[in-house]
Length: 418
Image (cartoon, rainbow, N blue to C red):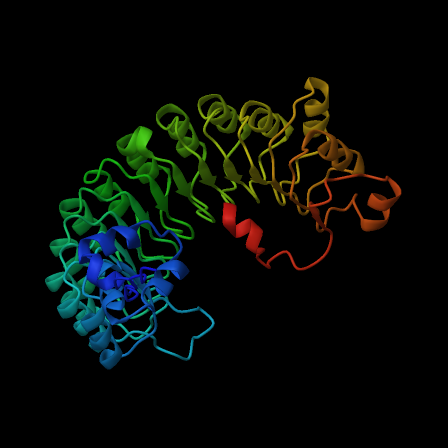
């Protein structure tokens, strides 16, 4: 009988002997979640090096030594997020020394988030501007030490800057806006909230520069009026999507009429505290932005009545968030009109604190706002928890009806929209 020939078992080839670096990079690119990419880097040192070299974004809190180590590992970073919580007021966060390391080590950087980092000064900004001209997004909100000197250096060097947030930097003046107008013609988003030294002159100068501003936040800039806003609205025109003018008490109908004439793509408008705005301009806005307007905050617009509000709610069919708090001339008539025309609103959020409508108005809202997620009726003199329960009003199970609490407290859901 012939003897069978036995062959020794062959070992499976090692994956690292089969796949090239390019092929491993292709596999890595197919992974969507960051957790999956992190797991990829845990396989072996080679895979870790590939994952590190391909990483483009990092969130961290680090001093100079750690930043140098990060630079050695993540050589291709284009986005660095170093912001800290506003509640950490005792901690300076990033310092000028840290910015020196970042500027020298991450030359491809496009996005730098330094929000609430109170330790940085103009010297750090000058370093960033000199070494990182590719910066497109810079958030230095609430960096209290910064002045025009540091940020004009950024505008002079970073010609491709598209998004700048300097909200809360109270030392900023019109000088920065003149510099942005001359140097940053690609600017699309600018936040100057609470920069109280900004005046009409600076905003007018800005309107002579970038022509495609999409988002502009001038909330609490109390020295600006209709003249400059009309000019920048006429400059940005169809590009303008979001305009925030919270507590800008000098703003009136002229601004809203300019928006109605030039900005058909406006999605988000904040005019809370602009007490001179009337129904006439609001009706014009509703006609122009009937398809685009999604979020409108107009609390404390005390001259607005049911006529203006009916125009907004009935014509702006895609409106999902509305704040009419303390508009004391608004009554049930607005919501009765919704019932008369049987209009099914897409509203998800309605803030109506300290408004004069009754539980009948709330009942109509529950019938014609089927997608509502949050309604605020705090301090409404004619609406209480007891009356609400007695009337057997039924909102969707997921809807939160707020009867109590302090009016000044912010709600996270509200912040998402306004």
